[in-house]
Length: 95
Image (cartoon, rainbow, N blue to C red; front, side):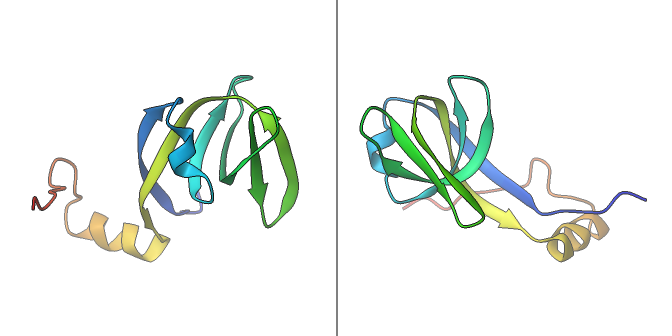
């Protein structure tokens, strides 16, 4: 049986606006095609990707940045599944 893990919902942004993400956690894809969820920090010639459980990845170029707007733990995923899912039912409030 497959173990259920958390689901992370994000909106992908093309790099170029990475300055707004310094100090924030985000999903990223490097120019080499590697994907991570890391804290983005300013580097000398790119960005540094920081994590609490791994050594920093320094001075990388990013292909894209995904802003994390929701993270659902396994218990919430199971509850949503029992209620029929949420595909197409995610709504945002407008100001």
